[in-house]
Length: 285
Image (cartoon, rainbow, N blue to C red; front, side, top):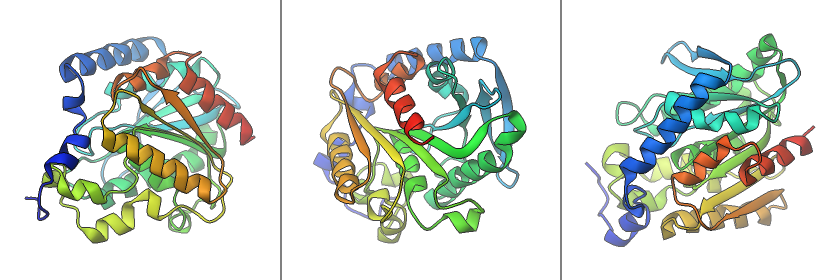
């Protein structure tokens, strides 16, 4: 049960499902793209990065010397699978970047803190184990959409690295799509009915409240122009906060896309988001 009062306007602004004519059609299209990717892109499947939870990742396109990009799925932290997010692999793999697509434990069975912990473990696992697949792990590149955009933000934050045995500058490029970077508005939406967040959660796990003072991360942000105002505000706010620190950030206009089909463009090797991510990765080398 949500301990905070529901605000109908805020709830509307963050309701991704109702922002499109048919969520089922959008979901089915992403599943079709993912099924094709799973059939066509070479992959090492079900590599367990967290024995405690059993969470694993699929590694697409591993080859000697390639950088690696970790994709973190959305679904408001309670839905989604790595198989259903294989669409993130083809575009980057075609450009000689390996792509790891991860699972994580889902709410409400686990807390947001546990989910963030697993994402950070996945980064650390790739940093320590990627070389065994021939990968260049000098930097780990990351990305995600919606809840995955939030989770991407939590690995851009400062202060967690020593606990996980990775260097402060482990993250190179980051692609965050339609993310939620300040969790406080969600306290007043139906989402908190399964997330059970409080102000301590908001303070600890909102990426906008933990932007590092110094970083060489190359951040790429985007949000579909057809999305609701909550997601538009969150992306603009994170962009402005990142830029105010003097950090590198690029905002990509995707005016004709919604909350779901924006992610499907990652299957296109020449797509604007894939190309922007490649530019960011190259800037880290």
